[in-house]
Length: 331
Image (cartoon, rainbow, N blue to C red; front, side, top):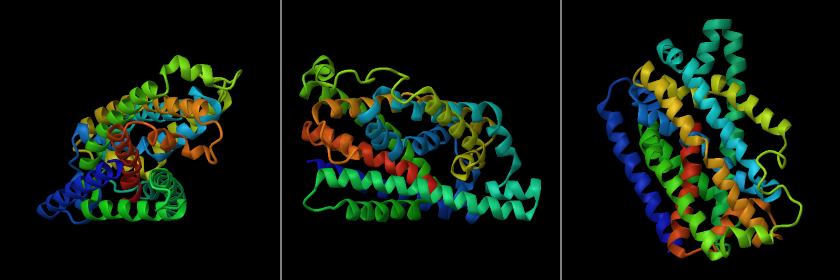
């Protein structure tokens, strides 16, 4: 059942990408049409692009992995992302759209010359490769937990990469935008359904809390991760909001400055609660599966112990999280 739901969802996303490819062919503008959706993304799609970029493998599987060790405070990773989106929306999204540039390196060349552009290109490539790789790691963890007899961690990552690249290649930026609208809905629907099912399967949150190792900072919003790490997340996320291509490109592709501004603010608000919700999965896994070989399997392990239908929806949500981030990064 879980595999059937996942495959169906992947086919739906490929169908959306195919539809988006028709929009690209109907439009004018060549590379701008393919890589920036002809600069015509409305507010809702801008918000979905930002939320989809933020709520990826690191923000779901990764947060649950961290929460397996430190508890609820792991959710500040996503909260920092949300704060970055809101601040960029308030201060620069409109300005970025009005600049009519395609890339951050192009912007750097305008300000500081060709050498700055080359340095910026190299920096962007390094950042994008690292974050994109995390999405493949998350996808590999999901497939390994679902079908350990079929996939190793490595082959799971390879299959994930091939599927993610295929969806991105076919649909371009319009495809990324339209699939991310669906992805964000599926992500939150899957997370909420799985949390409810997990609570029922494992005897409710009181029983889960009683099973946790004593003395841990499980439900403390700050002490597990620590204020120093939370502050560093805030600094990194907020500054990258002004400087990383995958984030800024969403503003470049907006229909106008108003759509960019409102889309970033709305997207930031959508991002805020996701991390704390996913941290609960790590806490549940720490209570019920304290001896996992890899903490990265915390969230996928929960998925395999709930009802097949909810587990399948949740599996699709995890893949949606990876796809929603990967398509923006790859483009």
